[in-house]
Image (cartoon, rainbow, N blue to C red):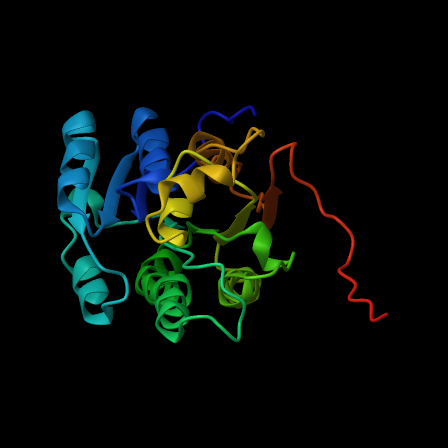
Length: 258
């Protein structure tokens, strides 16, 4: 994937930056000399990123489900980082594979809080500045599950469908503002904490999901984010759906009664 030169943001706000996609996205931008506000809940991991890149990375301890904390975070950004011209809505999670009638309501609420409510609160906080400056880019990490249902996907898939539709509606709302909007929808991706969290910390169960195949990596997604943000200002990439070669869509389910 060729990244255009001379284009792209100067200051990026990345949520969920302490691991997985978020850490890889932070490194991708910081390596290119771009300032990054690395936001997440785990201070020690954020500090490690800051030590790696020096003053190009501003560590910010933030729980995006805390609406007041989100507002304060943007109000208190120091001058070198105050004009955010790219937001990467990366923070998100899946919890459990239970079928809907067996699933935990607490898990459902948590996914909605992070994947939907947290995402829209951060987006709402950054948008006024972007619109006032006539430039900016909202990049949200969705999922292949937004359009491809599977047993146990229920609220996780629905939350990512929300991310997809919210992004498309933002494009309509921001028409003529100069602000771009992209949603990136990965398929099966390994090497992160995502599946381990989904499996309740069971590493063996999580590892089994990738047995015998080569999944995407966090670096693949980080490169996709960098590429869409580096396009010329007149170009908007609406949606990228990226899956490993080992993954494709199969036919419908059928329940037959003898």
